[in-house]
Image 1 (cartoon, rainbow, N blue to C red):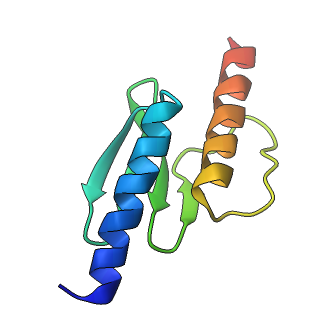
Image 2 (cartoon, one colour; image 1 turned 180 degrees about the vertical axis):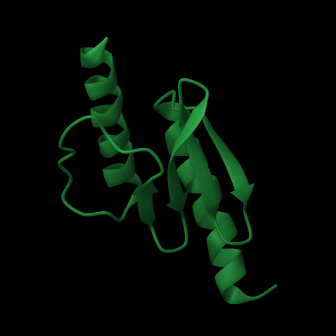
Length: 91
């Protein structure tokens, strides 16, 4: 196993545990690259790559999302919570 792959798997497991602790529904798409999809309302709304910490929105938020950076699992969780709040305000 390559070092990058091992690192990706370890970080993917860590990120998955944090997401579980925050009751965020997610699916590990490919642990060898650390790719995780994060769901809201049974739809994937974000992708997170655990090895690099990069996250992106797959659906455009209904307002401004403020985070310190577009990297890191904690910033990803914060962005997710803001997304959910914006979605619930629209209802």
